[in-house]
Amino acid sequence: MAMVDTVRARMMAAMKEKDTQLKDVLSSLLAALKDGVIKKRADLTQEEEFAIIAKELKQTKETMEAAPKDRTDIIDECAFKIKVLSAYLPEQMDEQAIRAAIEGVLAKLGISAPAPKDKGIIMRELMPLVKGKADGAKVSELLGTYLVG
Image 1 (cartoon, helix red, strand yellow):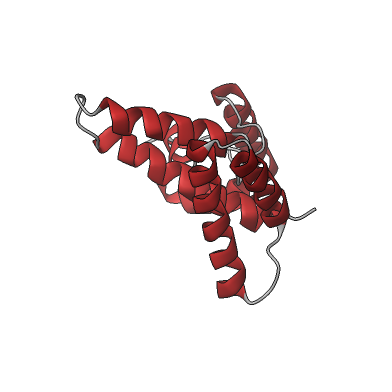
Image 2 (image 1 turned 135 degrees about the horizontal axis):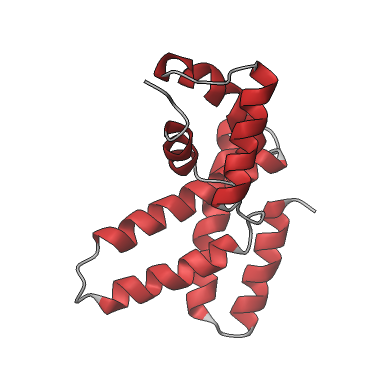
């Protein structure tokens, strides 16, 4: 079952349950997924669906961080949206799993002391392994701890 169908079915259930907050989040997600289908002019792959959901999640986190501390309504709304969107993503990798992936790529490439100039090569190999399962900024930050010089 495509993610669009899953989200639509859950949104319909939320409407029947009169859960307007959940319906609004799922409606927004459904619109983003449909937009992806329209732009591609074909069905999305699972990775593309996850990328769209991750983008929505990232934007929501940025909104939450930018909200003034006294605007608890915005913060609460974003926290709810983050919880809902996270449920549609694969389980995210923790720092230890990301480090293991980095070390695996370094071993595969035969790089024992990576220099900053090697970062592009390493990231090119690493990102397909962690895409949709880890935040790219976090991966880049952790890779930076391995760079020498």
